[in-house]
Image 1 (cartoon, rainbow, N blue to C red):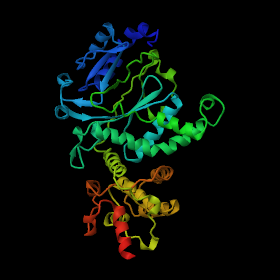
Image 2 (image 1 turned 45 degrees about the horizontal axis):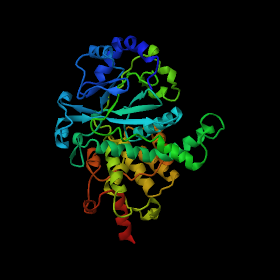
Image 3 (image 1 turned 180 degrees about the vertical axis):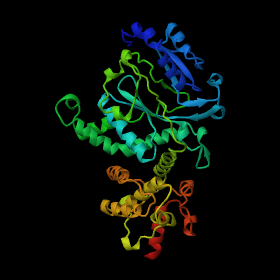
Length: 413
């Protein structure tokens, strides 16, 4: 149902030059389709000038929606095109994580946990915006992803790889999400009046999962600072520090202050995230059951580190954050205790030049201990990039540092 107040503010709101510029700048090289109340305009369409926005509003447009995909020429798109044609026209894609729930507080918790998970994987630059209703849109720019991975052209792997990352992120934050929802529903007020019991809480955790339906070719999402027809609120951009205290009244169109939604990402900062997600997905879809972490029990004095781990433990000058990620997951996978891992990491960091800050290490350790265990990344370009890959004969036969240690332990037995 369209909000009764919407028509009274449309022209006033969209006539603002800063609003026009913000929508236009974000939507460059994207398919952009106006919405007219309950229905969308024709496709394909795009914006040529910032002033196009107000012109569309004068014709009845109420909001603007754009693609995650970045195209050579959006106006040449056609519903008749086959997958191969779309892949050739696509120059890249952003990862858009759509979080929505019946309860805004749940969406806040999920968004916060996902941001923590992304930071743990080395992704520091994430755009955050209010959806306009009860959720948030997180965005990781195309620039952050490697242009090739697993011998595949990344730009051609949409929507598959974006979906895999979304599922992977949900899987690793789900235990913490259930815990947080349990805390929110522990009182007999507010949300707690409506949700009770472990099973119900688990259901709510599933409902607030990232929407992978949005991750499909030519699917559209609400552009930043576009209005929401039902709530009459603006899809405003937030800083990470504003997420927890955010209130829908902050998105009042008459109070909007424009910020940049698209962050200035570093080249390949999401490489670790992509490779981990692909490895996880591959493990989940093996025909045979994978080895459980609980089954990996090797006496400490019989553990043989692979060459890459040995090289890390000598101390690092560059690539320390990636090495920390590898080291934590390697030791965690072998069921080292938290104190053993902390001690090992402290010893390692004392050899680094310069050292990683203790606060950064504590943050990474805390996150790893509270969430589901992850295998270290598979042996790939990832290790070569930080110059720790110095393979021996056994390395040529295995795909993961854990497999090296397991194989060596069998030989010793």
